[in-house]
Length: 408
Ligand SMILES: NC(=O)c1ccc[n+]([C@@H]2O[C@H](COP(=O)([O-])OP(=O)(O)OC[C@H]3O[C@@H](n4cnc5c(N)ncnc54)[C@H](O)[C@@H]3O)[C@@H](O)[C@H]2O)c1
Image (cartoon, rainbow, N blue to C red):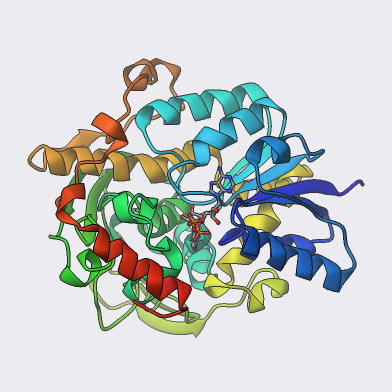
């Protein structure tokens, strides 16, 4: 069978996918696009080392013309749908980095374009695929802890030390202008993937901005929380942000008959409790190590999660039904992303509850068309720290740190 010809848009985070694709026997990496030349130079050096040919583009329009079947979106997090839509229309399969879309209006346009195209759209929410989280999914779907009552997911990542490296001192970089509940799918996504339950409503909360992030040019409330109700009535707390903590992110499922816990983001130990016959706290507690379902994932980033997103996507394009089940399709991707958008509506409106539309239903789509929340005049997002609150000197200092290869 012919290999899938793949292009990668964005060479920063995209380099992780580039590495996966160069090792994938079913894929041929044919093109990479990034307007920042040093990132293209790194790809050129890798291609020379391996003796392969990869076309390099600085402009999206030129990249778009390249002969390729599929494209990885690793460009700016708030511009994935904007570029994925024309690529889908031109017949390319899509693997999208986080996040899915920037507004409800884009959500509708994306879902309709995917449907019309018939192509494989998959969301690269790598936090769903660590060995422990895959095992939690297997155990939950096996019925081992009964029906879900409550869950927690966390993505706690104080990025202050790498802020110069990832924002380059750009005042309007999406990382500086985003809002507290924008980057929500690392924490909520795995819970939805594990349980196959849909979110139906959300209430949002945020902390105040933290001083160390404002001093680096960020304008958002540092911690974002979405309290999400699922279709069966279960409640999920999704917490994420640049807050300081003594332990890294944990994931927790509590069912009617037991619980499953991933204590620490990258280790492989699952902790479980399953009820005994009388269901009166006389059950079995266990801890055991989880293995990768594909051995090659072992050495890759984010606890192996970086391997599976590309692997399942390529297998799904080739028609592998098991792989398709493991990918995150456009509807599931929007179930992960929309709660972050509606949580921010909730925050700006006194923490009222918002219903999360189910875009599988065509009749629910009309209400979202033209809704470009949270963008207000001049493309700005209303944040606790205003644009004018941060002087240019802050960004100049961060830019200088970046140029000198220093940390924030
Ligand atoms: N899943 C994860 O664990 C993880 C980790 C890091 C980043 N990400 C995601 O990866 C994406 C990229 O993040 P990043 O860390 O590389 O930072 P980034 O968003 O600053 O980088 C995007 C890259 O795309 C290039 N780019 C953007 N628009 C372009 C255009 N129109 N033409 C040409 N080049 C363009 C930029 O030059 C830049 O190199 C984001 O969506 C981010 O959320 C995910």
